Image (cartoon, rainbow, N blue to C red):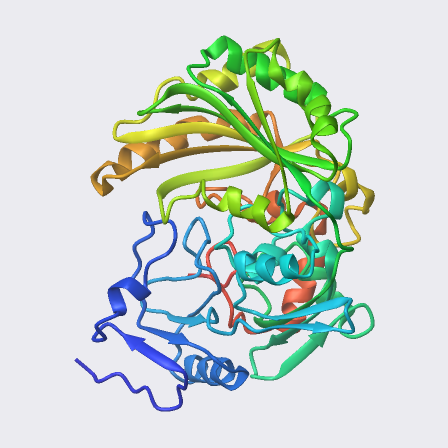
Length: 451
């Protein structure tokens, strides 16, 4: 075997011969099992630049990783170099009104920083997700209807391109790149090494709401989904929530939801009332500082999972029959599955105030995102779960429009149009301008190079 020439790489370099290799190659979705040629943990911009130039010299494909939460694992790959920026995690407050973060900062780190200032931030629900990947895909979280998507607070970013140059992008410089980086997803154009965000105004406590219906039969799940779609019509924009209708090995069929309401608990309870289905769904409200609210959400996430999932956009009310069909999809789990579910994520509010063509995030006028997922523990049951999703996705696709790039689905056909809608032609032009040789090509990337 030819010896791997690592000359030129800087930062911490991990290869298949390194003792930490097996752990270093893992993603949050443990169903993803890829074997990179080399993983480089970057600490400074020069480490990123050197990794890009090394990859080009040795004709090794590049994958970019921040938080390692790409559901389909496109931040790793077989025989690739993984440029891991998770250790570039500095945060600076400029003039008490702008946050400049390095590309590897995670939601939890940013939340702790802004929380110490008494401020919120429109970050993601899962706190271990990287802020850069979250933002590049648009960024849905429990503050989206009140503060906008994550990308809507973005003022500027810095990116290392295919030549190793650091490009700045904002409303005045490289405007087309700045437009594209607000919704096109991570992994395209280059390696984002910093982002600057507007700091939201300080808030006092917010209301963290949870709803729960144990042993909810299919009929109650149907009634809830119907109530949800009408609830969104005139929903107070201070409220952003999601809810899961699920069928788990431990609980059977049930409903669980949560959200943030930027107001007092009595107002939150009143807003949530239509979802309680005549008292069949329980409501819990806690009035907490923002940081405690995100910590409460964090406590509900496992260390990692094995799963297959995707998310689509809903623009209309479903009929009674369509709701029955949707709920019917999860009444039987795949063999080996510990949980199957549908999850809805509220849109509207500040999200829909922005024109679909103003940023690369096209589906701003959708009412909500509809996700479907299956989770398993034993790797031996992966084929059964993949097949379960494959059988159900066509129906979900038939009654929805477009797919959320941050909830990707690898078998998706015509994925560029699905993820980016009518913004696709412009994104292709931007990608050809800033990455003309497809150095940052990956599965489901823009203008993906032939494999």
